[in-house]
Length: 251
Ligand code: UDP
Image (tube, rainbow, N blue to C red; front, side, top):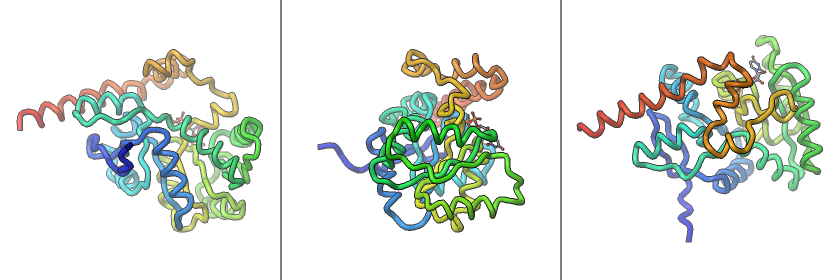
């Protein structure tokens, strides 16, 4: 029988990543939805790990998360190099879609916060059409005045949503959730990066070939060349892993 010890975590540059596959991640998601308080789900890739390395406050937020999903082929490669292989890459956007499809069957609702004006509403309409029964209880863009943050939280709470998806980009979205965790009435909050851009059709996701060969970053780079600095995080991350492993081997 499959070992159900799904809290096993793999340490990658000081950041613990849950060794989960998609089904395990969804099981934990359902547990978190049923547990009191606002739980936090994060979906780091190698770029986010390198940001956390330099920003202890962000690292602390990831350390406080209830579920850390390995979104990124770099993490899977790194885990193999570290000889503690992760089960698989669980893409944040695929996880989110599966989570939404579950909410569609339970009648629990979700709130979409983030993206350029109009994008969250467009994404909500698209997801409600794709998953009949899904209720997006509210949607708002991510370019609000920080002075209005309390108002935004009140709007989310008034919607009655159990899940909050925050698309402000990392680490802004994780800081938003951490800062408001005790005030948020939702059961679970997750940072979803550019997912609404994809759901709304504003940005195209990489074709299957790229996704299956760990080349999604290359496709995104071709679509959004301004991401070149961000794409450079992957080789830098691999070098950090190799240097770390070299040190460990010499010990
Ligand atoms: N965004 C936002 N408010 C901000 C900064 C960013 O709503 O102040 C949105 C932006 O419009 C985009 C998302 O956050 O939809 C970040 O997307 P990105 O592709 O950078 O996400 P990641 O690569 O971090 O998943």
